[in-house]
Image 1 (cartoon, each protein chain N blue to C red):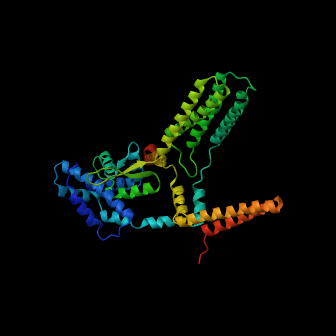
Image 2 (image 1 turned 45 degrees about the vertical axis):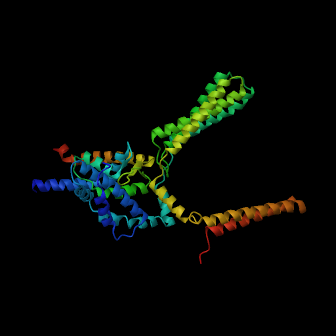
Image 3 (image 1 turned 60 degrees about the vertical axis):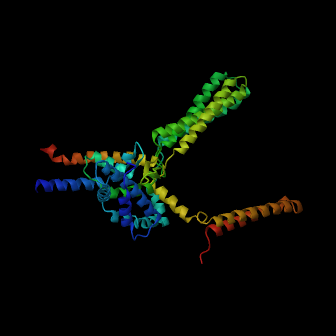
Length: 123
Length: 305
């Protein structure tokens, strides 16, 4: 495996893993303040140092799912110029789910870290 | 950014949505995309890109817009019918069942008993059967009524149930404090009634009650969804089944039938009471109830042809 291929497969691995947590990531971004779609995408993109790990188009499916599940509320902003923006607000249900998912992830992370270090402890 | 040229985005969006049967959901998506693409294009233009290129770049960065549009067409209907069978509803309820925590139940019962004792103490104290100095009575009221009420309210909201997530701590505390203020305000007003020379008590009571009303209003207006997704889906399904929800005429008809049935039943009861006597006149009420229930059954579960 060339270094380039290795980097490629690492990126695929990370984005597969990330995709499973898109809902939680979006909920996390909305914790402090209401945001509109592009703003959410931008926040995520900037946090990952500009690598587009989560595709903007897939976020719309996430928004729709979150709204349907009552974890997020959508409302239209009152911009007069250009396109009106659809803002998202986290609900109490969304906060509870976010907290639970973070706990679950932390637990999983601990287990995986332990399992990945199995050989290291025996040698 | 308000002077950015956005015509390129409108054109590209129209192209992407061309030839697609528009649903309200797709219309919504189109408007949402418009807002977001405009924001991105404006950002690019600020960096010196010209309008056309910025619009093109914003669309490209978005990713596969056709797949996105296609994904908003189908899966919704499939997901909606998934809950349809009664078996899966029972299964859903069992799978999502959350048992109350024993500690919470014990706390609630004990505090409810304390509050009940506090409330039971008020009338004899106020009427002078038990002599308690007003300040001491106020302290008892605060400790034995307002405090338990507030704690039980906050504690209940912090519990996860089968259908609801636990409320965030700050909101639960807010509801608890407001409920406590309401209880304390009402109790202080009651203490004033027992000792009408203490005008400040009345003032304090009114201030507390008004503050509690303001608090409840604020909490109510800022309340967001706390229901679990499965419970929300069930609620949606029941709303679809409700024959009155999408047929206001049927609801109005049912209202009129109800009035007619009960007016006739009461009239029959009155007439029979005078002519035959109370031994048999109650049958008119029973007949009214039977006709009412049959009407209800026919309207809610219409006979299928």
